[in-house]
Amino acid sequence: MAALINVPSKARRGEIIEIRTLTSHIMETGFRHTADGTLVPRDIITGFVCRYNGAEIFRADLFPAIAANPYLSFFTVAKESGKFEFEWIGDNGYSSTASASITVG
Amino acid sequence: MISWRAIAAILLVTGPALLAGEIPPDARRSGYAFMGPDTRAMQDDDTANPGMLFVLDGEQLWKKTTGAADKACADCHGDARSSMKGIAARYPAFDKALGRPVTLDQRINLCRADHQQATPLPYESRDLLALSAFVGHQSRGIPITAGDDPQVKPFVDQGRALFMQREGQLNLACTNCHDDNFGKRLAGAPITQGQPTGYPLYRLEWQTLGSIERRLRSCMTGVRAQAYDYGSPELVALQLYLMSRARGLPMETPAVRP
Amino acid sequence: MPTTRRQFLNFAGGMTVAGTIPIVTLRPIEATPAMLNAAIRNVVGEAQLRTGRIKLDIPPLVENGNTVPMTVSVASPMTADDHVKSIHVFNEKNPQPNIGNFYFSLFSGRAQVSTRIRLADTQKVVAIARLSDDTFWQVASEIVVTLAACTEELN
Image (tube, rainbow over all chains, first blue to last red; front, side, top):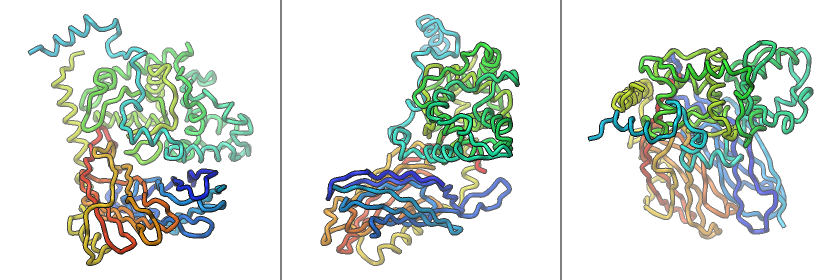
């Protein structure tokens, strides 16, 4: 499944930068029924974490009220060059990762 | 009090000489013009536009071999950025062998059958939407010219007739809303001109990407009519007329709409 | 064109009502204010809930309740002594009161998060920030969810 990550490729040391993530997921609420009355089982992303050179900088618990294809935007201080790692986990053993690198000068 | 009939008469006298129910070219506006700033922002930024997730998937599928021929789209068409540029702005387009216009979705499946020896992708399946979004995206910003080919003229006319024809329990034609009442509100939502500039597009209501045929079918359900089947000649003709009606408007695929 | 304006409006009204019925009858039980309060107490415990400091940006009139852009922020220096630990967002009328919990760090730089949420109906959204001194600050916003015309039947 595709994910769109937007991290500036370059930043000044100490600059506050925005990180945007968008990932494919239906986020089935578990509250909907099919035409014949069967409950559609819940299938959502329940957790997200972003690490910057191994250290956790942002984390989220998600619920069925988060729209399909979850979008998250948050901030961090550009402290050193390196790698951002993103991880989404969810129902039915769902797990997906992505990464992006940054040069801090 | 001025009667409605009198207002209509005044409009007829002072308005430009147009056929009833036709929007003059300089008044044609994409659905984008009718949406709020938040939805526009979602479309404008590729890293915030969820339709781009499908474009990314489509790019992978473009390069992936499939079918008994073990060929990828890219094996024939190369780099889509050049080979597919402007293509979606001309679709539905005339197919000589079939003697009728085919949609981009149908063209993709014809390619699969003829050149990849692969099974057709079902309408509204993720893979078909992803491929048509990827191909459509290569035409972003290019003015629509579908319907210019003289060979498709009878099909454009058929589509126009369907657009003008009242149907369903509410006995409404497409033109009643999208030519005569655009800019007004129906329930909480503005009525657009129904210009198909950004398909397949991400609809917030659907929370996914969908084709123009899905949209047309929900309009038909809205007026309590029996919706035409996916790929039916009627839906192809309607799509062709809508594209010709949007002539000159730039493609926006993948658009975002409420 | 024989259609009069009145007839058109009648059609429009009919369409809205007809389109609304299946959604209403199929919607599960709404989160009650009691559930909302319980969900908030689950996060806040017995601590005092103060109003202010936190800002909730949602369009007051949303175009489609299925995908509503939302930004929550607190003006905070985000230093070791004075920072935002977390932000918690709740709703009043969805089937479930929680929307999301967002946890910041000392590397966050800015206590702000944006996402897209679902709102089943016109309702109140509540955001609560937990600061480094373990005080809790809240903001509430009434959001009007407009009904779209000609929506697909629920399936």
